[in-house]
Length: 72
Image (cartoon, rainbow, N blue to C red; front, side, top):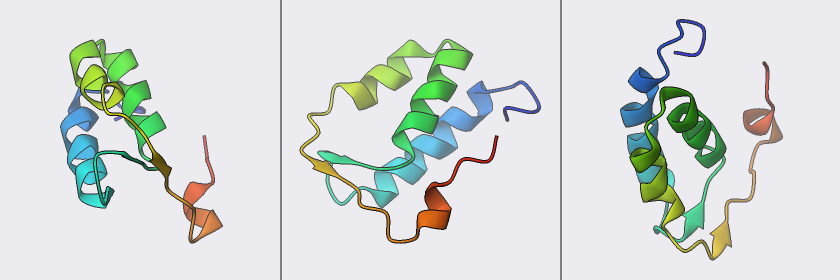
């Protein structure tokens, strides 16, 4: 979606992925920064706010470092 310059199309699928990967709403995942970046680029601030309103008390620890590498 970034290369196609349509970040709005990635918001819903990424939000679903975040919710599925989170053991609880208080859990921060590696997908959160990408989701928030898409929200900013698409100017969908309310979608990002829904994630930012959650109180975070746990941070996801990478099990496989390769998954957390950024290739941009």
